[in-house]
Length: 205
Length: 327
Image: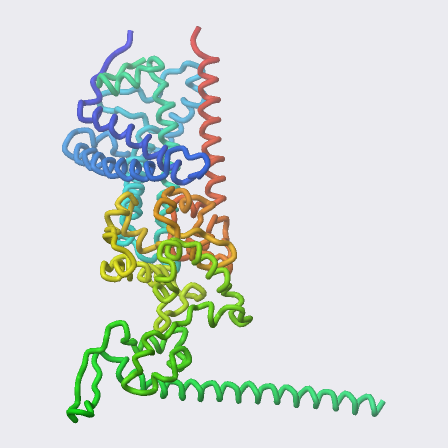
């Protein structure tokens, strides 16, 4: 008999759904622009540019909602990393995902009301939400208004450096997205974690 | 043995004397040229005394009084721009009639036919690299020539008194863009000049290009002719201006590794330096950034390898989960 815990309040679910849609749109349009091919475009260039710009702007607003929400609600506590003993905890979770899971061992850090994320989840979410996403947002706005934000960086074009950072971090966000979606299938059932983000209730094994 | 040494000394002496003679000739030539330039400049001052300002004065022989008149805008020559132009070393009467030497100028001189670029530059070995004949051919096929026939000539875009070559230089691309676009806007943003050739209402350029994303950035970073002229591999600057229906509207024409900008705006710089460090169209990156054209080969490869690793990892993990699932 699985246990259900209410972990995801309405605002988190709405924020998460919008964030997911926007990130997927940004990845598809970003790849389409970066690897644009006149004879075989993934998305027509001008449409991809507009979609990418608009999605990026909405993502910025959505990110501000996430930041504000994390400050004024208890949600922020889940992102507080405890550095002491972090590496052994990360390794324990890593070993579970690489070996334990196939031996049907119990998860080393079960989900509770106090601890929503396992150490590996917490660590990657902190990196994604407080490092990667802010960097793509800032560099994205700089690309949107290059005349205002960037002039010249060192001896070359500031745009070049900025674009490099935007594209590389964009790749990492994409990697995160793929792994995140895959790991969501590791729940009580294949779809239970996806359901949780709709109902708000987490279903334990 | 002695005669061999003597012969060698004689040869070296002859070569030295020849070198000194050539240097002397070159110096004399330079001195003569500089002198000629100074003479021409002094001669031109006689014309610029009136044509270099917005008014001119003359003595009316009948009334005996001095009369001040406004100079026609078309006949005012900007002294500073002329001094920097390609034709700065010419005497006014090299191109205009010698009869302008007298004042009042004879009325028939108004009918004086003006030279076109090809009249001086055509068939001249010194200017062969500019390919004026090809430019002339391109211009004759352009919408400017086909729609306006003889009313449209080289001078409408390339004012002989101010025109300065920009593209074949180390000038910044942005400066080249600003200079060249100003040539188009000279008529296309000035209704009075535009309507010298047509009765049509001058289209609002900003509105007509409203579809262009980041319009202001495009206007500052690329020339009108990038989209409005057909690129020609054999000349540096395209002169075959196309009708508006044939203008480039597909973003990927520029925003791709096969960017047409490499054959147009960046053509000269492309010849000067090739892309480095795995960057496609690296030349563009020296002064700008064009999405889709400036990608890096190694970065693309690395991302592909990383994506493949992530996909393979997920696939292996998922397969193992399926294989090891509880029965």
